[in-house]
Length: 264
Image (cartoon, rainbow, N blue to C red; front, side, top):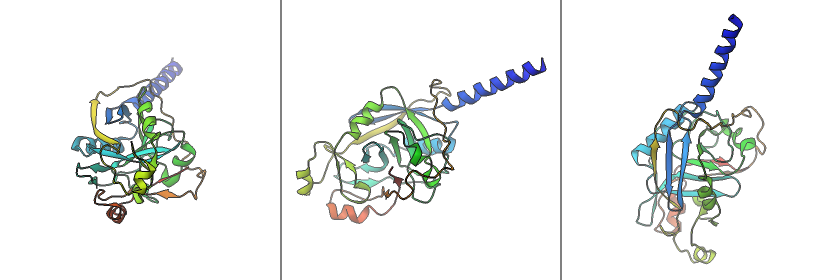
């Protein structure tokens, strides 16, 4: 009987542990190219989720933009706001959050961007993994904190954004995805506006229940102490400023604040 009670207790513990992985808030990322919902890992990455929801609830992500897209790697956002005056302004950021590299950077997961060489530097910027980036992002810079997962067919929206052509305006905007914008526009120094930029109209909480998607089973990060697949791969910054007076001003401001994700 004692053995049975021990086994029962262990099984119950495993069930509770599994459930805790899916205890979550669900948010909806609303973009001009469609909406997608994200299950946040409140219990497994509590500090990161709390940090993210502070930006959500403050309205910091209203009129935000997707400022970086790298094919078969990531789509990044959270750093800049379009202010309707043909300018991009940096999101005001708070205290950086401690790193929580619990889960693996697999396709469809959301993770925090951070400064190179500083695991505990994430603020407002985050990205969606387009593919399995575990061999790189689970390892580099203390591992990149995965704090949510795209639900249902939401990746179709992310993939449509990732399919847009990218343009190099330097700094944070060296891999800038744009709609209805051509190489000729770039050559003629045409400044992109709201008809070209991928704007996130808002991110809102749509379900704050304790357990929202119990079927989710995010993969654990088991590579945290491994050697990166490409340790010398270049970093790309995501820095701040205003965009609209011209490319010169853009390039002058974009180095104000750096956030890095290392490419595979």
